[in-house]
Length: 194
Ligand code: GLN
Image 1 (spheres, rainbow, N blue to C red):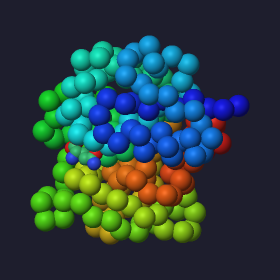
Image 2 (tube, helix red, strand yellow):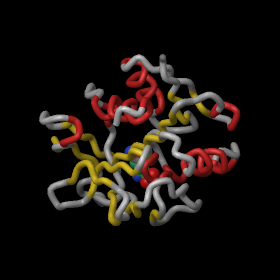
Image 3 (cartoon, helix red, strand yellow):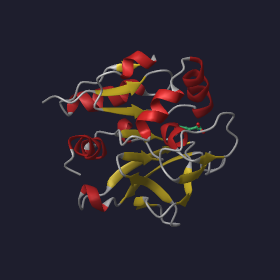
Image 4 (cartoon, helix red, strand yellow):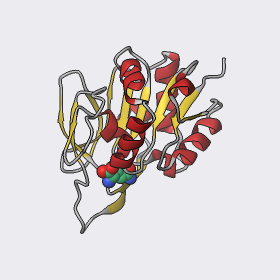
């Protein structure tokens, strides 16, 4: 049966996530209000600016229902700012992140010199071919609890993508590439295949 994956569409690159999910045969409705969460099989929180996304989530009263889903084994994927929103702790944030995954992140971890960059990373759960990753003013995972599976690391050993239960996060932007594998991996979490 077609899966319905909501995409939080308050700010950021939600359009690219929707396109990717549709390419994989899923429905990808926008989520802007709590009622948009009804009947979904999963949710994607896109990249963008986490302070803005968090503020709008507060304004639209989305934090309590999304937290509740996240803590009840509901599949959620967060990329970049979305990873920050789902983390347990992040620096310089004026709202409390949801804490859906037991990681602490450092926002804008690469500083001005290497603000944004692209690199090929090995993500073994996605197969042998490297994944072309795009980092844009990206956060990094600086602490991960025991239950967290780091799926890929940067050469310095810092986590770039991680999973805990049905929560999947990445510091980079798979939605800005043609590589559908991380989104397919998420859909497999949704269907129970992963
Ligand atoms: N720097 C942004 C933040 O801290 C994240 C950037 C992104 O999502 N590409 O929210």
